Image (cartoon, rainbow, N blue to C red):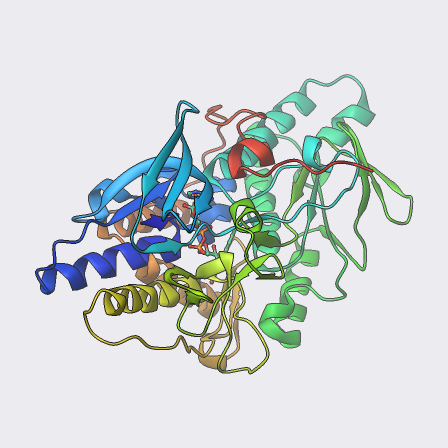
Length: 432
Ligand SMILES: Cc1cc2nc3c(=O)[nH]c(=O)nc-3n(C[C@H](O)[C@H](O)[C@H](O)COP(=O)(O)OP(=O)(O)OC[C@H]3O[C@@H](n4cnc5c(N)ncnc54)[C@H](O)[C@@H]3O)c2cc1C
């Protein structure tokens, strides 16, 4: 039983099914997840920016996981003694299933803080619903600004605040800027009237890519008119403005909160030891004292054997590789092959910063500008785990290179669909 269909669960299911088929072992593999696809999250900023269609970054499980049973539902509790779990199906009915081996890969959710109004008025970027909502909402705000009589309200509608300057927040603000520029051209208003503010408590943009590339990214963002404020975050969020830590006020109707992640809520409900909100596991991805339970990916605190004392960061790069080790070790627990410990040295990161620009440090080679853009797009095309999706994304890239961006708000995801509680399943924090 594999809980979650993200990078880790998907890779584990696919690899495990292959191993067991080769060994002619008649084991039932079930993936249980609230969604029927594996979401290629690194392209969510492109979805929010209107470059790539949401379906292109959703790899359908039914088509991509041969010999694996799929159950749609959100797991709510695990009974380790009875080897069973309870889950809530799509119609909110409670159900129960039993398992012999349990693989916990429910990933992570946006980390929320008890900032008044945050959960209510801000939206994240972890799900397709959130990415689609941001695209639609910004286009709608720009359309409303065009017919607004009050210049102050029009300016607020044309102001976007993104909180979190790590790679996902930075990619998001760059893509949204490009969307707003395309909208300005097509709707005939001044692109400079759309203001973007990027906030982070850190003193650097994208610390993950190192100081040199972080500075290069900062320069590009500022050149595109993005107001980057470091060492700064939100104090309050309201429907039409935010208050920053220094008590200054920004009038805005759009706040994206992309400050980091924590283990999925299920993890803290298991009653097992955690580290930084992630389930503690051994280097072989087994849960201590539960030899029949495994965990990995963003949901697990996997010891980083290349940096003793640390845990692996929550990235797709680790999640995918851990999925493969999970498959091998679950198969070993069933008597096929031998288990191994997880060890992987970071291969670097690629960060797409919108039109003609990216930064990347593959194998520690620092690239920026157009060469990094080529590497970034080539990497994503290689990493998407299904040829049809690769094809669709490459056509989207080509369309983006040859034609003006489509500025449309189709309304696929409502404000409620994109709430943290609905789209990510986060119980909302109590404001003290
Ligand atoms: C916008 C964005 C951009 C990113 N860009 C990059 C990048 O460029 N490079 C990189 O390396 N990493 C990137 N990441 C990080 C990467 O997405 C994660 O590290 C990766 O998704 C972790 O994989 P996972 O399988 O652990 O979790 P996920 O991919 O989050 O999958 C978790 C799965 O579990 C399901 N689930 C959750 N709760 C339950 C439950 N209770 N019951 C059943 N199923 C459940 C979810 O629906 C989902 O299917 C990015 C993340 C985001 C949000």
